[in-house]
Length: 332
Image 1 (cartoon, rainbow, N blue to C red):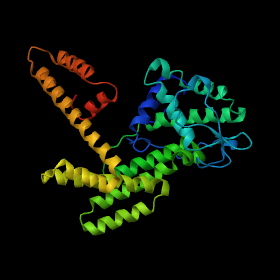
Image 2 (cartoon, one colour):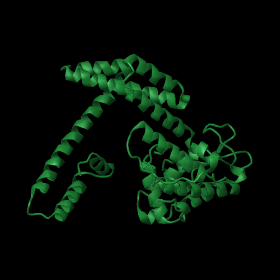
Image 3 (cartoon, rainbow, N blue to C red):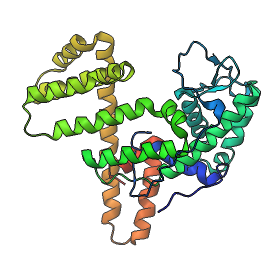
Image 4 (cartoon, one colour):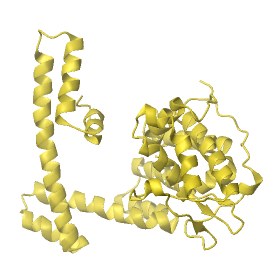
Protein backbone atom coordinates (compact mmCIF):
# COMPACT_ATOMS: atom_id res chain seq x y z
CA UNK A 1 0.00 0.00 0.00
CA UNK A 2 1.44 3.38 -0.94
CA UNK A 3 1.90 6.21 1.47
CA UNK A 4 -1.09 8.51 1.51
CA UNK A 5 -0.90 12.22 2.16
CA UNK A 6 -3.70 13.37 4.45
CA UNK A 7 -4.91 16.71 5.76
CA UNK A 8 -3.11 16.71 9.06
CA UNK A 9 -5.69 18.81 10.83
CA UNK A 10 -8.40 16.16 10.46
CA UNK A 11 -9.56 13.77 13.15
CA UNK A 12 -8.68 10.72 11.07
CA UNK A 13 -4.99 11.49 11.05
CA UNK A 14 -5.05 12.37 14.73
CA UNK A 15 -6.57 8.98 15.52
CA UNK A 16 -3.97 7.23 13.40
CA UNK A 17 -1.24 9.28 15.03
CA UNK A 18 -2.38 8.30 18.51
CA UNK A 19 -2.39 4.63 17.55
CA UNK A 20 0.99 4.98 15.87
CA UNK A 21 2.57 6.55 18.94
CA UNK A 22 1.42 3.63 21.06
CA UNK A 23 2.32 0.85 18.59
CA UNK A 24 5.41 1.75 16.59
CA UNK A 25 8.50 -0.38 17.23
CA UNK A 26 10.86 2.13 18.48
CA UNK A 27 8.75 5.26 18.43
CA UNK A 28 7.35 3.96 20.74
CA UNK A 29 6.90 -0.25 16.98
CA UNK A 30 5.40 -2.18 14.48
CA UNK A 31 6.19 -2.03 10.51
CA UNK A 32 5.63 -2.85 6.75
CA UNK A 33 6.14 -4.26 3.45
CA UNK A 34 5.36 -0.81 2.08
CA UNK A 35 7.51 0.77 -0.66
CA UNK A 36 9.38 3.69 0.85
CA UNK A 37 10.24 6.76 -1.17
CA UNK A 38 13.88 7.82 -0.87
CA UNK A 39 13.49 11.56 -1.38
CA UNK A 40 13.93 13.47 1.85
CA UNK A 41 11.52 16.31 2.52
CA UNK A 42 13.64 19.36 3.34
CA UNK A 43 12.77 21.48 6.35
CA UNK A 44 12.52 25.26 6.07
CA UNK A 45 15.99 26.88 6.14
CA UNK A 46 15.38 28.37 9.59
CA UNK A 47 14.95 24.88 11.06
CA UNK A 48 18.54 23.92 10.36
CA UNK A 49 19.63 23.39 13.95
CA UNK A 50 19.68 20.45 16.28
CA UNK A 51 20.47 20.98 19.92
CA UNK A 52 20.45 18.86 23.03
CA UNK A 53 17.67 19.41 25.53
CA UNK A 54 20.04 21.25 27.85
CA UNK A 55 21.55 23.55 25.19
CA UNK A 56 22.62 26.74 26.93
CA UNK A 57 21.38 28.93 24.06
CA UNK A 58 17.84 27.55 24.32
CA UNK A 59 15.13 29.57 26.05
CA UNK A 60 12.35 27.47 27.59
CA UNK A 61 8.98 29.09 27.13
CA UNK A 62 6.41 29.42 29.96
CA UNK A 63 3.30 27.27 30.35
CA UNK A 64 0.08 28.92 29.07
CA UNK A 65 -2.76 29.73 31.43
CA UNK A 66 -5.18 27.05 30.22
CA UNK A 67 -2.62 24.33 31.05
CA UNK A 68 -1.44 25.65 34.40
CA UNK A 69 -1.66 22.89 36.94
CA UNK A 70 -1.20 20.27 34.20
CA UNK A 71 2.27 18.76 33.91
CA UNK A 72 3.33 19.37 30.31
CA UNK A 73 5.77 16.76 29.03
CA UNK A 74 7.98 18.59 26.56
CA UNK A 75 8.21 22.14 25.39
CA UNK A 76 9.58 24.59 22.83
CA UNK A 77 13.15 25.88 22.77
CA UNK A 78 14.28 28.78 20.61
CA UNK A 79 17.67 30.27 19.80
CA UNK A 80 18.70 33.90 20.35
CA UNK A 81 17.04 34.87 17.07
CA UNK A 82 13.69 33.41 18.10
CA UNK A 83 13.99 30.45 15.71
CA UNK A 84 12.98 26.94 16.68
CA UNK A 85 15.52 24.45 17.99
CA UNK A 86 14.46 20.96 16.95
CA UNK A 87 14.99 18.53 19.83
CA UNK A 88 13.32 15.76 21.77
CA UNK A 89 11.45 18.24 23.95
CA UNK A 90 9.47 19.31 20.90
CA UNK A 91 8.64 15.70 20.05
CA UNK A 92 7.48 15.14 23.62
CA UNK A 93 5.27 18.21 23.37
CA UNK A 94 3.60 16.83 20.23
CA UNK A 95 2.98 13.50 21.98
CA UNK A 96 1.61 15.34 25.01
CA UNK A 97 -0.84 17.35 22.91
CA UNK A 98 -2.06 14.27 21.05
CA UNK A 99 -2.29 12.29 24.28
CA UNK A 100 -4.36 15.01 25.99
CA UNK A 101 -7.16 14.12 23.60
CA UNK A 102 -7.34 10.68 25.25
CA UNK A 103 -8.59 9.05 22.07
CA UNK A 104 -11.79 11.12 21.96
CA UNK A 105 -12.51 11.80 18.25
CA UNK A 106 -14.20 15.09 19.09
CA UNK A 107 -11.05 16.28 20.87
CA UNK A 108 -8.61 14.69 18.44
CA UNK A 109 -9.99 16.80 15.62
CA UNK A 110 -8.87 19.93 17.45
CA UNK A 111 -5.33 18.83 18.38
CA UNK A 112 -3.67 21.08 15.81
CA UNK A 113 -5.67 24.14 16.85
CA UNK A 114 -4.95 23.38 20.50
CA UNK A 115 -1.25 23.40 19.78
CA UNK A 116 -1.56 26.69 17.91
CA UNK A 117 -3.45 28.22 20.84
CA UNK A 118 -0.85 26.87 23.25
CA UNK A 119 1.91 28.60 21.28
CA UNK A 120 0.02 31.90 21.12
CA UNK A 121 -0.77 31.96 24.82
CA UNK A 122 2.86 31.54 25.78
CA UNK A 123 3.99 34.32 23.43
CA UNK A 124 6.13 32.07 21.26
CA UNK A 125 8.10 34.14 18.74
CA UNK A 126 6.22 34.34 15.43
CA UNK A 127 9.00 32.64 13.48
CA UNK A 128 9.10 29.74 15.93
CA UNK A 129 5.28 29.42 15.87
CA UNK A 130 5.32 28.87 12.12
CA UNK A 131 8.18 26.40 12.45
CA UNK A 132 6.46 24.45 15.23
CA UNK A 133 3.24 24.13 13.23
CA UNK A 134 5.15 23.07 10.11
CA UNK A 135 7.04 20.51 12.18
CA UNK A 136 3.79 19.24 13.71
CA UNK A 137 2.22 18.78 10.28
CA UNK A 138 5.26 16.85 9.11
CA UNK A 139 5.25 14.73 12.24
CA UNK A 140 1.56 13.84 11.90
CA UNK A 141 2.11 12.84 8.28
CA UNK A 142 5.08 10.70 9.33
CA UNK A 143 2.99 8.97 12.04
CA UNK A 144 0.26 8.20 9.53
CA UNK A 145 2.78 6.66 7.11
CA UNK A 146 4.56 4.77 9.88
CA UNK A 147 1.28 3.29 11.13
CA UNK A 148 1.21 1.12 7.98
CA UNK A 149 4.52 -0.51 8.91
CA UNK A 150 4.11 -4.00 10.35
CA UNK A 151 6.53 -6.16 12.30
CA UNK A 152 6.29 -9.77 11.05
CA UNK A 153 8.32 -11.21 13.93
CA UNK A 154 10.83 -10.35 16.64
CA UNK A 155 13.72 -11.87 14.69
CA UNK A 156 16.84 -9.70 14.28
CA UNK A 157 16.35 -9.58 10.51
CA UNK A 158 12.74 -8.42 10.70
CA UNK A 159 13.54 -5.89 13.41
CA UNK A 160 16.39 -4.47 11.34
CA UNK A 161 14.19 -4.14 8.24
CA UNK A 162 11.48 -2.44 10.26
CA UNK A 163 13.89 0.01 11.89
CA UNK A 164 15.46 0.83 8.52
CA UNK A 165 12.00 1.44 7.03
CA UNK A 166 11.07 3.78 9.88
CA UNK A 167 14.38 5.63 9.55
CA UNK A 168 13.72 6.19 5.85
CA UNK A 169 10.17 7.35 6.53
CA UNK A 170 11.44 9.83 9.09
CA UNK A 171 13.89 11.37 6.67
CA UNK A 172 11.32 11.40 3.89
CA UNK A 173 8.64 13.17 5.93
CA UNK A 174 10.68 15.07 8.52
CA UNK A 175 13.97 15.73 6.78
CA UNK A 176 17.42 14.91 8.16
CA UNK A 177 17.54 17.66 10.79
CA UNK A 178 14.18 16.93 12.38
CA UNK A 179 14.66 13.14 12.13
CA UNK A 180 17.93 13.38 14.05
CA UNK A 181 16.55 15.88 16.55
CA UNK A 182 13.59 13.63 17.33
CA UNK A 183 15.02 10.15 16.90
CA UNK A 184 18.83 10.09 17.24
CA UNK A 185 18.74 8.27 20.58
CA UNK A 186 15.89 6.01 19.50
CA UNK A 187 17.75 4.91 16.39
CA UNK A 188 20.90 4.21 18.42
CA UNK A 189 18.76 2.04 20.73
CA UNK A 190 17.20 0.33 17.69
CA UNK A 191 20.64 -0.63 16.38
CA UNK A 192 21.58 -1.92 19.82
CA UNK A 193 18.38 -3.99 19.99
CA UNK A 194 19.06 -5.70 16.67
CA UNK A 195 22.64 -6.59 17.59
CA UNK A 196 21.56 -7.70 21.06
CA UNK A 197 19.03 -10.11 19.55
CA UNK A 198 21.73 -11.51 17.26
CA UNK A 199 24.06 -12.11 20.19
CA UNK A 200 21.33 -13.74 22.28
CA UNK A 201 20.35 -16.00 19.37
CA UNK A 202 23.95 -17.12 18.68
CA UNK A 203 24.17 -20.65 20.13
CA UNK A 204 27.89 -20.85 19.36
CA UNK A 205 28.71 -18.37 22.14
CA UNK A 206 29.54 -19.45 25.66
CA UNK A 207 27.84 -17.59 28.53
CA UNK A 208 31.02 -15.58 29.15
CA UNK A 209 31.40 -14.71 25.45
CA UNK A 210 27.77 -13.67 25.27
CA UNK A 211 28.16 -11.41 28.30
CA UNK A 212 31.30 -9.84 26.83
CA UNK A 213 29.53 -9.15 23.52
CA UNK A 214 26.54 -7.60 25.29
CA UNK A 215 28.78 -5.46 27.49
CA UNK A 216 30.65 -4.25 24.39
CA UNK A 217 27.36 -3.31 22.72
CA UNK A 218 26.28 -1.36 25.78
CA UNK A 219 29.55 0.57 25.82
CA UNK A 220 28.86 1.76 22.26
CA UNK A 221 25.65 3.48 23.33
CA UNK A 222 25.48 7.17 24.26
CA UNK A 223 25.77 7.74 28.01
CA UNK A 224 22.14 8.88 28.15
CA UNK A 225 21.10 5.38 27.01
CA UNK A 226 23.87 3.26 28.52
CA UNK A 227 23.16 4.32 32.11
CA UNK A 228 19.42 3.48 32.22
CA UNK A 229 20.05 0.32 30.20
CA UNK A 230 22.62 -0.85 32.73
CA UNK A 231 20.08 -0.18 35.49
CA UNK A 232 17.46 -2.15 33.58
CA UNK A 233 19.83 -5.09 33.25
CA UNK A 234 20.52 -4.99 36.99
CA UNK A 235 16.78 -5.11 37.68
CA UNK A 236 16.36 -7.96 35.19
CA UNK A 237 19.13 -9.91 36.90
CA UNK A 238 17.53 -9.25 40.28
CA UNK A 239 14.22 -10.63 38.95
CA UNK A 240 15.96 -13.83 37.81
CA UNK A 241 17.76 -14.23 41.11
CA UNK A 242 14.53 -13.57 43.01
CA UNK A 243 12.72 -16.30 41.07
CA UNK A 244 15.60 -18.70 41.75
CA UNK A 245 15.31 -17.99 45.47
CA UNK A 246 11.56 -18.57 45.41
CA UNK A 247 11.99 -21.80 43.47
CA UNK A 248 14.44 -23.02 46.13
CA UNK A 249 11.92 -22.26 48.89
CA UNK A 250 13.66 -19.17 50.26
CA UNK A 251 11.75 -16.98 52.70
CA UNK A 252 10.45 -13.49 51.97
CA UNK A 253 13.08 -12.21 54.39
CA UNK A 254 15.83 -13.72 52.24
CA UNK A 255 14.35 -12.11 49.14
CA UNK A 256 14.09 -8.75 50.90
CA UNK A 257 17.70 -9.08 52.00
CA UNK A 258 18.86 -9.70 48.42
CA UNK A 259 16.93 -6.70 47.13
CA UNK A 260 18.30 -4.50 49.91
CA UNK A 261 21.87 -5.56 49.10
CA UNK A 262 21.39 -4.73 45.41
CA UNK A 263 19.31 -1.54 45.55
CA UNK A 264 18.89 -0.40 49.16
CA UNK A 265 16.06 -0.63 51.73
CA UNK A 266 13.68 1.86 50.09
CA UNK A 267 13.85 0.07 46.75
CA UNK A 268 13.36 -3.28 48.50
CA UNK A 269 10.16 -1.94 50.04
CA UNK A 270 8.93 -0.79 46.64
CA UNK A 271 9.68 -4.21 45.16
CA UNK A 272 7.64 -5.82 47.93
CA UNK A 273 4.72 -3.47 47.26
CA UNK A 274 4.96 -4.34 43.58
CA UNK A 275 4.81 -8.04 44.49
CA UNK A 276 1.54 -7.40 46.29
CA UNK A 277 0.11 -5.44 43.35
CA UNK A 278 1.04 -8.22 40.94
CA UNK A 279 -0.51 -10.83 43.21
CA UNK A 280 -3.75 -8.83 43.36
CA UNK A 281 -3.73 -8.43 39.58
CA UNK A 282 -3.30 -12.18 39.10
CA UNK A 283 -6.23 -12.84 41.42
CA UNK A 284 -8.42 -10.43 39.47
CA UNK A 285 -7.32 -12.01 36.20
CA UNK A 286 -8.07 -15.54 37.39
CA UNK A 287 -11.53 -14.46 38.59
CA UNK A 288 -12.24 -12.76 35.26
CA UNK A 289 -11.07 -15.79 33.28
CA UNK A 290 -13.43 -18.05 35.23
CA UNK A 291 -16.42 -15.81 34.39
CA UNK A 292 -15.31 -15.45 30.78
CA UNK A 293 -14.98 -19.22 30.36
CA UNK A 294 -18.44 -19.70 31.84
CA UNK A 295 -19.86 -17.33 29.22
CA UNK A 296 -18.08 -19.20 26.44
CA UNK A 297 -19.41 -22.50 27.75
CA UNK A 298 -23.01 -21.24 27.77
CA UNK A 299 -24.47 -22.94 24.68
CA UNK A 300 -27.70 -20.93 25.01
CA UNK A 301 -25.81 -17.81 23.86
CA UNK A 302 -25.03 -17.17 20.21
CA UNK A 303 -21.40 -16.24 19.40
CA UNK A 304 -22.37 -12.57 19.01
CA UNK A 305 -24.12 -12.58 22.38
CA UNK A 306 -21.11 -14.25 24.00
CA UNK A 307 -18.82 -11.58 22.56
CA UNK A 308 -21.07 -8.80 23.89
CA UNK A 309 -21.26 -10.44 27.32
CA UNK A 310 -17.46 -10.74 27.49
CA UNK A 311 -17.06 -7.10 26.45
CA UNK A 312 -19.43 -6.08 29.22
CA UNK A 313 -17.52 -8.27 31.69
CA UNK A 314 -14.23 -6.63 30.74
CA UNK A 315 -15.79 -3.17 31.14
CA UNK A 316 -17.07 -4.09 34.62
CA UNK A 317 -13.87 -5.69 35.85
CA UNK A 318 -11.22 -3.42 34.32
CA UNK A 319 -10.65 0.20 33.38
CA UNK A 320 -8.25 2.33 31.35
CA UNK A 321 -5.00 0.61 30.44
CA UNK A 322 -6.11 -2.53 32.30
CA UNK A 323 -8.42 -3.29 29.37
CA UNK A 324 -5.45 -3.10 27.00
CA UNK A 325 -3.46 -5.41 29.27
CA UNK A 326 -6.23 -7.99 29.31
CA UNK A 327 -6.51 -7.94 25.54
CA UNK A 328 -2.75 -7.92 25.10
CA UNK A 329 -2.47 -11.06 27.23
CA UNK A 330 -4.92 -12.84 24.95
CA UNK A 331 -7.50 -13.04 27.73
CA UNK A 332 -10.29 -11.21 25.92
